Length: 164
Image (cartoon, rainbow, N blue to C red; front, top):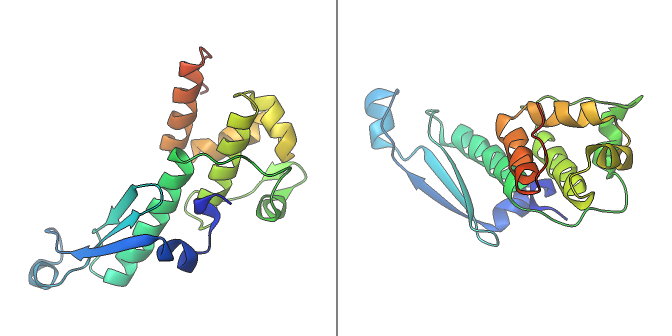
């Protein structure tokens, strides 16, 4: 299973969490308290951090989301033999419904990119495997510019045109 699809507590078990101070809004309180959170996923070496909020708990939640998204973009796993239960629960009448800020988004991006890579970057084949249209697949990736950029880099190395 792709690490971006793991439950937060299981994913955090594979991470090293570092707390530190960062400067910025929040004044004296922020400068005295270690509110910044850095998560390092030990199996892959991928890191993410958050420090823009005054609350350590909020920064931890944001850092975890960023880590899951970064794992979805960088780390590839062989796809399952069909859409996951999470994917199927998000597809209604061939349309994929998820916001880019939703906790399910990184897992769906990971599944989509794994499927596209397994289909040798053929979007129609990957979309058919996942039960959506190619435009729905591209729309999912467009919600996070780095996701579409990651796919376009892969397409560029394979000599294919970038998607818009």
